Image (cartoon, rainbow, N blue to C red; front, side, top):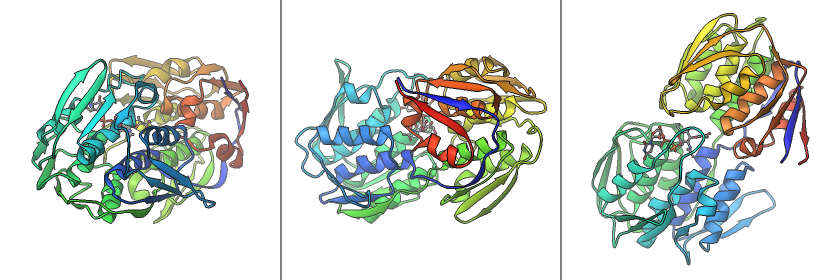
Length: 419
Ligand code: EPU
């Protein structure tokens, strides 16, 4: 298994481009199933999760072409199979995103039921309840979701809890349903707006994406389109946090700061100077130690759970005490035990981490448990004294494009050790 060897102590400086957003790209790739024509996606990030989604569509008979400019053209309109096998679903829970499009377009789907995962139980009951309301028959059998419907019929859906991929799944399904669907208590993440924009460019009729209520008028068919994947706000936030913990001075190009306002506010509270344009964010950290910042994660527009682990490191090397309150996932503190092995002083009680800032961390051999946990271990390694080896980095390759190259370009010293 490959590992990352990090020699800590360098301040990050310089400028890098933000990659396309994984969590925008995944539903967009799934949405190609709804179309009767070819779809071209540009600025797709080169990530394991994207490859897995292509493998999934490929296994169902989609044709995927890559041109010399790294644009992907996807023809998913003639699928010969509507099954997402367990081998693929177990490596990526976002495979569930093909459920809505398959039932809407082909009238059936057989999707392996995602199991638990490192950050929580993560059930898919909200997706299934909403799809049933649209008229699908759903049976759980032998570890699979078997869904079928002659035709989905628009209806009112009130999500019991806010779910990002659930909102995406149902928004996609409703585009081809008969009549009007009103989704209430919808997720408001920017990736929902991105997906709605792409679906609209394919002929879908969607109003209100980004708000609590989304209204979709079903259409009979969707066309092809060409669409650019917007920049990854969590990647941008992670590099900004990396600069903040290394007393750095960096600029992230290509990111719209309105997608990251809560993170920017907290970085400012930590003592960083931030400037932004409509398409870039710069951070300059001159303070010896960051100020501690209390964090409570919650759905957009509040502080993202996907930035919690990175801010745990920022607080761990801060000048005081802080509390990180994780309200989205019930078990997203696996990184804390590893961080404590590097000299952090963090106690977890229930869904809260109580952090006492220390002046410095030391390198250690640590193990990544999930995507954002691995990012936090890299941040800790960057500001620690000595060498840190991060094991199980396949987690990081699922969601950060060329992370060591980008960080080394900013002055870090990271080497990928072969397995
Ligand atoms: N939930 C249910 N039932 C459901 C769906 C969700 O109880 O049917 C619960 C979950 O267990 C969780 C909460 O609702 O406690 C929110 O989960 P949500 O469904 O919003 O998460 P998701 O759609 O599975 C997406 C991102 C995650 C990100 C979360 C929260 C994608 C592909 N994944 O997951 O990204 O953490 O929203 O913002 O968009 C990551 O990139 O590292 C990542 C985990």
